[in-house]
Image (tube, rainbow, N blue to C red; front, side, top):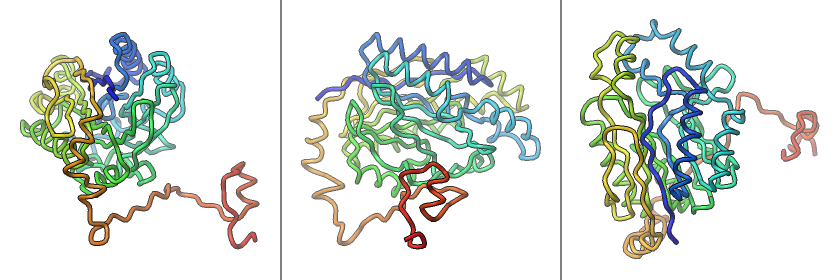
Length: 327
């Protein structure tokens, strides 16, 4: 089995959900004309990564947070429908990062659309990183799994979730074949991109899977705008670009993209997965589950839980199990 994939390095339209969605849909159509079957877009590309959280003092960022809240994506919505329709028209599986609005809270979410346009996974970053804790809510482990798609079994993680070995192992144990990795781009010091490269290549080796990694690009005007709006040096937004495809041996396929917009397109030969796993299968013959195993709670967290068949029926839920109180 061979799958043509694209790791997309693309700029958002700063401060605009509609503008960024338009850019994403256009790019999906462009990739479709090139025969791409699976595309990965950057972390929280829609509407943009909250760079302000990294450089501003907390008490000065209220307006920035409200703007991001108003421009974030609800799921489902006309915006997610537009991405799904573009995926359907191009028979393409699409993984993309969004700021997801749920009430008054924003989450760092990854959306996975199947080739028929169906949203088959919505997962939220389980632990926002450092400054991100002031911006995003915490996700749960309900989406910490690999899912079957038209291009194989796909797992997704965002940014420094790749520094969480147990989160990665949850996907390894779930048999992912293609891993969608996404980072913001334009953030941090000069060592951010080299560290990112180490993380995604190591995951490919341990999981014996392909990794398709995407980072966002910021052009000169966008960096200047962010520097002006946040009253900081432009250099703070000038690093951290590494868009690449990695094979199960940890090798970079083709040339990574470290500057400018574009995409890395590669054909993935799934036979390489078996070749790697013949020697090292971290979920099979190289595992020792009687000594080391992972316990995971994939229960979806919610602020409200109703008990009893009557309460479930009144809420219109037909999938709830009756509690012992109702029996």
